[in-house]
Image: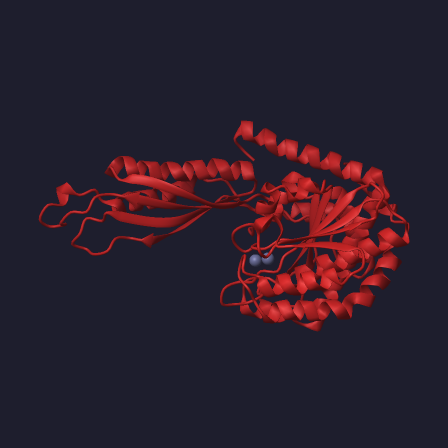
Length: 423
Ligand SMILES: [Zn+2]
Ligand SMILES: [Zn+2]
């Protein structure tokens, strides 16, 4: 899309939603703060976010007009909350994350992601009533972002299609600056297990089949493959079981491996190449190979239309998201998120907002930073910008049409790469 058109779309904000949303979020900020602290001070791992689920759903149930489904779609700690204007129209959604990391608590700041999405959704719903807009506002409680991929499960179980969701909005705190067109890395993980045959390693080694040898061949194959990967490709792995004793031919060996790449298409090609190394190990030794597929997170497909609206609002509130060209020129980050999978299903943006932290995400000091009043204030700014983005989509069919058109083209372009076998 031409930058002129984006400027026009951004100018449609007409300054009506921003002052309203600004005031509204300010009025609920003090209510959201204890929710953030409760989640932060009780860090819970993926799919066991019971306290977070309880605190958030109880709060949303107390809000007028919201229909809350706890433990939605067979996931104990997922939820869906719906605010319906009663008039058919666009359906906008916000994903709330709230899982923590083992040993270092909320070192990814998901307590902030939760209150940004709740604050933005409540503000958009209030605007829906105040400005008599059509459509619906939804919040999905999406567990297990740090492992397991709760959003992927919700996607697969029909949560987004059941509710005919048009767009998905989310945010993420980080240690650096602000962003709205972040491109994350596509990720996939798998367990590889070899089963061989035990034998006395001195008396009759020829009677055995060495599973560890098979795994080491695969591991070395992975190391050689690294020489011929593309920029952005990453291969990782470790051995979880390397046999039981030196005097036994190893009957069993296992490890966990990861392939990451700039796009999901490239990731799948890389994964196939990596798994060929494992087939080579099996073929060379005679050991039997078994793969167990773990989660696959797709890369984030940024949306320039939604990004332009969000950037304008966020920067008017004092944020510093760079221009689209500048942001896109920076390239992608090496981290991965299951919001990427959502971005392949519908137009989506993830608003990255900087908080003051000496260390980056997944470090103990980031957990401390995610608890400060300053981080809360920055989260509230993110909530306002995402609320305005939602309001404009609800108010203007043309914006949704443009966002969808861009998304279709972007996802279609990525599909082409499948045939070309490159990114
Ligand atoms: Zn995170
Ligand atoms: Zn994280």
